Amino acid sequence: MIIGKNFFIIEIPKTGTSFLRNYFRKYQNVLITTHHDTIEHNPKFNLLKKKYRISIIRSPYSWYLSFWKWSCLKKNLSPLYKDLTSQRLKIKRLKFNSNIFKYIASQITKNTNELKKLFSDVNSKKNFNKVLEILLNSKFKSLIGSDFSFMPQDKLGYMTHYFFYQNVLRKDYNILFKPNLNFGKTIKKLDAKIFTNHYFRTESLTEDLKNFLKKNNIREYKIKNIDKNKSLYQKKYNFINFFSKKNLLLIEKKENYIFKKFKYKKLSKNYSNKTK
Image (cartoon, rainbow, N blue to C red; front, side, top):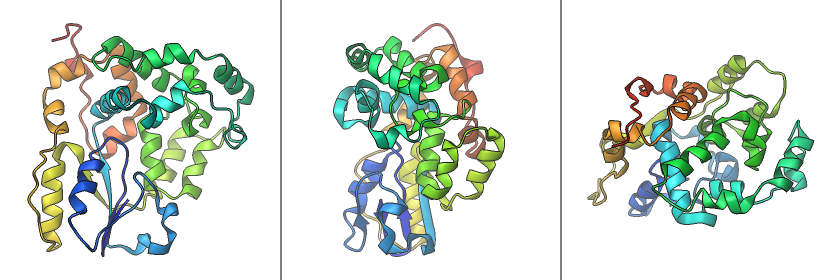
């Protein structure tokens, strides 16, 4: 987290948080804590009383692609890579799982060597879409080996679960582990529990940061690093065609909450089978 006098910034992976951490290190009165930790990890700061409770959001399309590409490069430094390519059978994980036998069987029998190959080529559209299928198709959920594997809601997106993990308290987030709950009502309950009240977008991160600093009369240091994610998102045609049409539609369905709440456009209608 990034903690200032009257603000904090929650860090969802692959949304530009490294850039923000490097920038705010210039300020002596700003604390940089463990990357991607939560409010519960920092109880002594009384964070919920801060005026600006900031989160960062990104288009689900570029988020998935960036997370996978980064995982290809970083391997074991990536939680996605570790969750997919390792056997996860710790007791503290199993107690959450409503379908414990399927989960154990999936973890024991999954071919970790084959899964590692899905992160071997950062330019492989085929590998990327296989990883997406595991993350988006509920029948492969038990292969993942993270909290997401234990959530019974088939309509829940992998990115949406990350968003709620960072933007609501853990006691509220835990509703996602409960079986037989109406998905729509569950999402509404979680939405009502969000404690963040201000958002930066990855696609306009530099501009959003500058506006925030100006609004709060905080000294602005020279920003040398341009937001690299912006150019990727602007190349819509090439960008969309890195996805299979099936996975593109699945992202739009399972991350519908993110699309709707933050007014991201769904781009599947512009999809072409020709990759350029």
